[in-house]
Length: 495
Image (cartoon, rainbow, N blue to C red):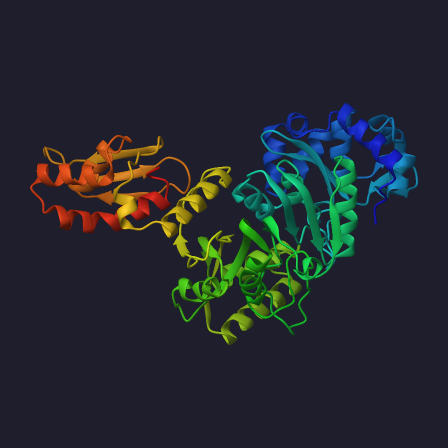
């Protein structure tokens, strides 16, 4: 466990700032080749780039990222205010004769506007061994996905459910007045307290499983990277606290979706990640839709990926640091395949679930979208706009849509594709430059509408003019266009 001694934390912060130990500086020290190799979990180029380099950032990379022993005098020089003795007192390193060896991973982290530092357990790259079951994960693919997709309006109370080392809480600190961070792992909470202190934050940190620590409380924003990995039970599998919720199949995510709405303030938003099982090749919307309809709040799900059982087993067997072909790897691989076969699971979906508590007594909406292509980064602004658009649609009827003057969004383009030698387009397509990159084929009438959607005419007036120009029945055109208009409003094609 790490110490959060204020004086030692202040000395460490001063040293990290002076180094400077930043994302930009570490990238410069490593160079593009070594940085790219490290991202691919290859450490040799990074070791070569930092070996015998006295630059404080290089020393800190060797110590805290690569897990190499570093002699005490070199550590003292890289951390002049804290020193090796202070690092020992904080629990950041252990004594190894004339050298010090890191007990944790400590690295810079940030977004476009903020710079932080994050401590977590050493990765398998540094330890050269599989992860322990109580491993506290640092910044990973799931945490960066959640951070990118989270909408960030100014809020009063926010909840980071299953905080891990506190990645999402750091992001919440940029736009939330009060943050509650929970986790079932005492080891994780030790890191959270340390990271909060190191980054000058004051969070309400609570121990407990899932929603138990916040029983009866509501929040304006909830984020969660829950232990959503579907792991076989009763197969002698290692149970990693950071990813395994201890329930059968996808029950962890199902329970969270059906219960989370109780903890949202009216108008509040929850953003979570999840896996779900696809059984007997049935549409994924059947299973996830049942959870959404039981939630009692608005639910918008975007499925981003589907893996078959073998792909899923390979991904998560490797995730713990086990190498393909080893006995442990093969045993886990077989356990996953047996577990999925027992429930007739033919695929596993991954996606982002956005929930919103209506501010009125209207019927909640459910929108289940499959979008596996490129997405904007960050996606948070598009998610917030998408929720606002869907709320508007849920609260307004067809007449309101037709009596509104819509404008095509600035990132919307319409392309015409011609066969060689033809004067008429074979295909007309609308494409969105941002968000989820929405695309749809158009007919002549819908293309004509987008060409005049500049905020001057109501949709009703524009469609009346188009029906006359194209010699179409106006009522039939309106009836055909309304579903398309709803899709475009939800996708932010129209604003």
